[in-house]
Structures are given as C-alpha cells and as structure tokens.
Image (tube, rainbow, N blue to C red; front, side, top):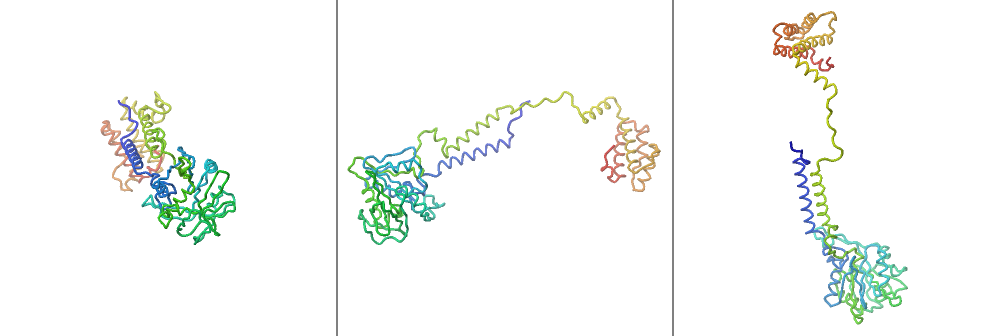
Length: 411
C-alpha cells in the first residue's frame, strides 16, 4: 500500500493557485510599481507642481554641472560648488545637520506646503495645504536660532535685490526675519533670501520655494531668477565645483547594483518569500511525519464494546443463536410488563396474555402470546423464523408503548 499523500487534491490546488496569484502580483509590481521618477514629493525627480525636476533640468540646459546626492551615494560639491538642500519636509537627521554645518556653500530652501497625490495621475498632486509656520521655523532655525518665518501678501518692491531679478509670486509670500542674517533680497516685510556668513562658510536661506518649484518656474521671470540664484552662489572660476542637490533629506537611496541586495528590497523581496515558502512546502511534502511517532494499537482491544463483540462472536461460533433470540423475546415481554406495571407473579405466557389485553384496547393487530409461541414451538427452531419473531416482538414493543420505550433505558 502506498503512503498517504501529505496534501489532498483540493489543498494542493489551492496552494498552487495562491502561489501563482502572488507571483503574478509581484511581477505586476515590478513592472508597474512606484518609482522615484513618478513621485509627487519635492525632489529633483518629481514632475509634480511642487517638485524640483524643472529646477534641475534648467541648470543642466544652461550647462551648470549638477548632481544628486543620495543615501549610499553621497556627492561632494567640490571647490566652488554649491550644496542645495531643497525643502526638507521632516526633521533632519544628525548626519544632515552635520553636513549642513560642514559644507562651505549651502542653499537652504524652506518648505511651504503639504501635498496629496492624485490617484488617477500618480505624478501629479490632488491638493496642497500650507504647512504650519512653527514647523517651517524649526527647519529655518538650523541656520539661525532666532530666525522667524512670516507669511503675507507679496511685496510690491524690494529695498535690496542683489540678484537684480524680480520674482513673481503665486498666492502669497513666505519671508524670514532675523537680525543675524544679511538680506540678499528683502524689505521691511522681511527677507526673501537671507545670508549668514561664518568665516569662509556661507549659507543662503530661500524663504519661499514657490519661485523654484515646477509650477513657479513658468511664471514671470522666475526661471531667470533661479539661474541667477545658482550663479550668484556658485563660483565657476574655482575649478570643477558643481551644484549638488541633497536628496538624502527626502530619503532617496542610491541605486543598488548587487543582485543579492535587491532580493531584500521591494518588490523583489516578494519573490524571495515565494521561494522560501516553496522550499518549506517541498520539505513538508517530502517528510514522512512530524513530531512524535504514533503509538501502535494495543495487541488486545479492551473495553465494553470489545467485550460485547467477543461474547457475540463466541455465541455465534457455538451455535447458540436460537437460545439468544428466544431469550430476547422473553426479555422484551418482561421489559414491557415492567413498563405497564404488570403483576409480578405472572409467568411469561400469562404475561403475554395480560399484555395482549392492553394491545387490544390500543388497536394492535400483533399479539405477544402468538409471537412467544412461534419462538418456543417447533416452527421457531429455524433461524429464519426466530429472526422474524425477534423483529415482530421489537415492532410490537414500539407500538404498544407509543414510543415510551424509546425514552427509557433498555434493560
């Protein structure tokens, strides 16, 4: 006899269907999964309204060397270069703060809005809401602890504008105020660009990001303003300095070339989990058993059921079927007699006649005395006749008791 299979047919079909569905889903995610090229955040990969892909491409078109610095791929601006930290939307890590204080030439673009993605067009935003001013202020104070952020109507003119380009605002201006910063562009309302010098180190803070975001570059002279800003901070005469956009503040990770490392990245980790699950199922299917071995059945089965079975077998082999069936007929009569409180001094024949009177009153056609006589007389010596007598006495008992016997323990 072959060993029973570990999995039944339906279970195996469900496992195969589930594995196929998960594998197809993983392939779909690999082909159409989220990509940093389609993000709606404030990175240089984002083509959404609040992204900086246009700012990055604008610099490239005008032959300004640019690069992205990402986690696992940090890039230094080099001599005469510029580090751009554009709109960090979360608290900067310790490494980010150290780098902000280490680079000699830094442009910090403050954030202004939160955005929600458009589900129908993942690269677009559905809506944008202003950030709380205290949140923006906490980021600006990484440069100057006493710096304040304000919002209001766009200034009509500037008392000072070192870039000589007037930008165009959208629906309001976000400005900064600080006695420790020197205005590059500013007036009594505040500064659009403030400068902090610390020895040879220079940090510019651009208060309103609308001017360099994708939606703002196409307005007025904002594209010219963005180029003038980069050229004013970058010193092209000092070697191969480049403009580096720090994307570590947005959590962007450098591309991993190692196939082994890719196995632990989404969505490739789904394939790894499928392989591990398939291996586990294969090991399970090829293993004969789990845990402790089953105990062998006892050589002799004990208990009441076994005792009754053995007794019946012995009686059958000894040829006592007729004796047992006659005893069954008489025992049934006495059981019904006790049910109807028959006089105890009656023998089986008198008891049968006494019970027949009750049967007549209830309209029974079967007579107990006749069944008893058939079981005891010569015609009852055949097994066929005895079987019929036992069946008749059982049916008679059910009829005369109207089911009462079915609710009493059989004795």
